[in-house]
Structures are given as structure tokens and as C-alpha cells.
Length: 328
Ligand code: AVI
Image (cartoon, rainbow, N blue to C red):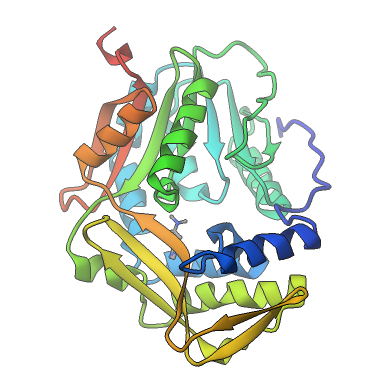
């Protein structure tokens, strides 16, 4: 197995308890109250997210995998020979495997992942599946500037792979900032291969975030379980409900934890009041038209060089390059 050694002492993105108390207190002081969506992903939350991807209503994963099954060979041709593939996150073994199977003489594969266990699993799986490939894990937060490991030989280009429509979990300004950071990391001749969920009828989108089995509701509520465990807050789980609705004007699913009653919750030394039906915002999942995505890319100095979509136009994978470069 051609895997570069790595050190994973920093287990995940868990900030020190005092910082987390401060983050939560600040979020609950804002109007409306809000909590950051990265809080979903403790060990249980990551398992629940995997379970969400299996739910019949959650079309995103299935559609993106189907797109890869149909178009990965063509994507590999577009990316060209001797690519260094840097993946933002490492939880997408199926899609990444499909891409790597078709890449022409890739130089290295660099999964960037904040949580130790998923990164370790990814390294092992990819190392076993592609024994000749240099796997260079990069433990860390992909929203921060990356110092990529030195590749075993000079790549012709660096391609950042960001599947899953995770870009949709960033608000417009943060999404553009993240793409701008990616533009710097890929360099002049590089590119970004990115998955994005497309706008469609409200019922289909809302069903994906309100599955019948209630897995998404558990995922949302797990954020409170995590806070109770990690900062000693006393959220009463039976007094908050999951709510996800599609805001068609803004083009996004907005997910909330809604207080079922008048209640107070202890966060550190503070008591925070919740009114009956008060909604605390926990996640946005933005949906795009092709024009929306081109406009977002342009804000980051990028343009869409290729787009792959399924016949039902459920999901898209875009290949972005620096603006002006696709005509060279
Ligand atoms: C990770 N991300 C793209 C998922 C989404 O669809 O926004 C997270 C998720 N939240 C609820 N269901 C899935």
C-alpha cells in the first residue's frame, strides 16, 4: 500500500469546551437563534448522515452516484493525464472510487478530512483498492487554507474534488469565499470538480429533508444530544422538533429546531429562554439552477468548463476552471 504516514492525534474538529460554550451562547443570542451546522457531525451524526443517504427520499446521493457511473470516464478525459486529486472530505468512497478508476495515470490522491476515523478508513480502503496510487492523507479542516503534501512526482494539474453538494451548506458569501480559496489551491491550470443539487419542485426537495423513517429528524436532534454531552447543557430532547422547509425565493432548504413550549435551557453559566414555536436555525442546503452556479463561480473568478446532468435534471457535477482559461 502506497500510503504516506500521517499523524492523527487531533481527533476531530471538536474545539475546547470553553470555546464551544461561547460559540453556542453567541449563536443563541442572535435573532433568530442559530447553531452552526458542523455541530451535526460527531460520530453518531456522521452515522446518521450515512443513513440519510440511504433513505428513499434523499435522492442526492443516488443521483450523483448514477451521474458518476455514466460520466466518470468522460470526466477523467476532461481532467487529463497525471492529475493530483485532492478531495474535500473523505466520506464519499463510492464516487471517488468511480473517478479514480478512470483517471489517467493519477499522481496522487489527497483526502482532506477533519475527523480521524473516516480519514483512516478512507486511506485504508483507497490503499487496498488502488495499490499503485500514492495516497497522501491531509488531516484538517478544508475551509482553512491547505498546505498540500509534496506529491511523489510533478502533476500536470491539481483538481479539487468536492462532491455531495456540500457547497450548498455554505451561505452565498461563504460559498464564494471557499471557491476563491480553492481557486488559489488548484493553481493556474487546475480545476474543481464539484457536485451541486439542482432546483426542482418543492415537494421532492422537502421530502428529501423530511424522510418518513425520521432519520433526518434524528440527525437534527442529535446536535442537542452532542451539546448536552460535550458542554453539559440541558436541552430537553422531547421539547424540540425538527423542521425543514424549502424557501423557494432563496432557493434553499432551511432546517430548524423548533421549541415545543416555553422553556429555559442552561448553556454554561447562562439560562437561555425559548418561546413556544421559536425556531433555531441549524442548516441551509442551497439548491441551484445552472445560471445560479455559473454566477456563484464567477464571484470566485471561476467559470464552468463542463457540466454533467442526469436526464431528470436532479443533480449536476461541474468542472470549474479559472475564468478565461477554458478558451485557451
Ligand atoms: C452534507 N449535506 C450536503 C447534506 C445536505 O443535503 O445538505 C446534509 C444534510 N442535512 C440534512 N440532510 C442531509
